[in-house]
Amino acid sequence: MEIPEITKPLQQPYVERQLIVVADDTVVRASREAALQELKRKNTVDWGRIAELAIQAALGMTGDLITTVAKEAYAAWSRARDAGIDVVQISKTEASTIIFPPGHPRDGILYIGHPAKPDVYYTTAEFHRVTFEHKFCEAITILMHLGATEIVVEHVRGWSRDFSSGISVSIPTAKTSVGANAGASGAQTEALLFKATLDGTATPKLPPQLSWFPHEPTWQTIAKARLEFGLRDFALSVTYNDDYGVNAGLKAAISKAGLDVGGKFEDHVSTEWRISGKFGVKQ
Image (tube, rainbow, N blue to C red; front, side, top):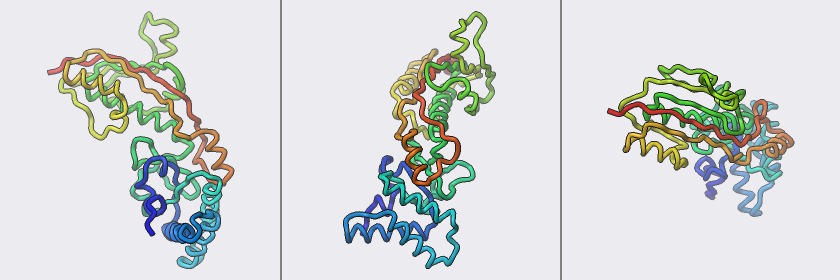
């Protein structure tokens, strides 16, 4: 029996593979076989029973090599499934095709898929911070490749200076500062996150492998205006309004089931940062 959402979970749409845990290959194989058999017999699945069968099968194949931590992780996964949380269990072999944070994956931690990069998963705790950071850094990268000579980032709403100080933005051959120009108002000083001056490039182009750009019409318009019409000044926003279902409610539910968020949970904050500046002269 071939049921793709069970047998090939990572090939499913985002909503069906958003939440994952990683387990030993033998356990995942056994749990999938047991789930398929239950679906065939009863058209329903008791995930607690599936976890028991999977652990028993794995013990039969590997002796006593299944650790207590791993057993608890399998049980937590089954409790989450029984509670209606669609956590997908994937094998360590399948996990080898995924980009995780350094030192991961680990037993019992719930990982959240990046909404725009199918091969990237973050811990639940850091999901919102690193997803926004990735989007912001992509916007900066696009502007650098388009030939920006000045980049000014200002806070409009949401995460502000304390949050921005933890973001690592690599801007080569740039002079960066945090603070406003002389004569700027107090409000402008408070809003300014950082300013960078660059040499720019006379041959603008878009960088490869963009994730957010296809979903951002304003970014596309600025790129077109720069590449085709020699745009000299720009202003765009990096917004982060969707929590993707990763919120305090999900944290409470998975914690109750026994799964780990992987650190100190950072909840979603609806955020907008404004990026403005100038482009250099094209060849």
